[in-house]
Image 1 (cartoon, rainbow, N blue to C red):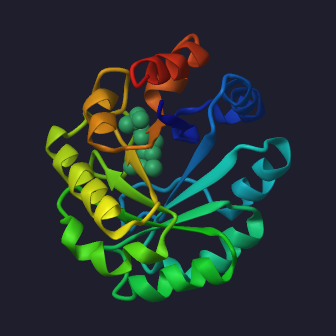
Image 2: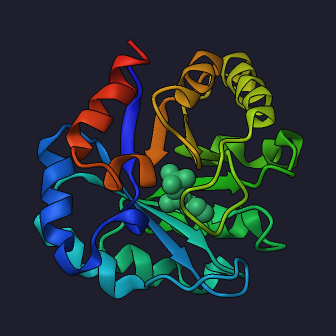
Length: 217
Ligand code: DX5
Ligand code: ZN
């Protein structure tokens, strides 16, 4: 069964605590927090203050996805705010190895993220350093986009490298995930599924979490 990481990007910001408690009680293992800088991606979202505010209200794994240029500028701040996992895009810095070292030095789970157009080979040299790899299943920047099926092959490639090298990172997918699209990704080796609009735009978010889990039994 896949672990589920609801993305608060599609939550009700005015009633955020209510939405977070709902998915926490509903069995979500992670809470996915999307940080957008208006440069690496066009949109602006929110900053470390949100992570700090959320930290005391839940024990879920706080999974912080940095869609920002030169993410190494913000690693210490998000670690100190209470992130459990910090994800940095391989495309966002010429120093991905250093960025992952910085995350590990803060004793936070290090995650490397790749866009749909970035091959797995690009991150092979750093796979031994990470707790999680995030394979974007849409182009980053917005919720509510359509899952790109061509990304599934990259999940399978990563899973193969994982077995061959005896590594034990999680493989997370993000973008366009629902109870149908998750199936092929799960079969290919995905272990964590981010879901934003599918969960929070529904009348019953917990039913949507369960439907993702049921589809991957
Ligand atoms: C997109 C973000 C996602 C987003 C997913 O750039 O990284 O985490 O919230 O939204 P859905 O699940 O609606 O595609
Ligand atoms: Zn995300």
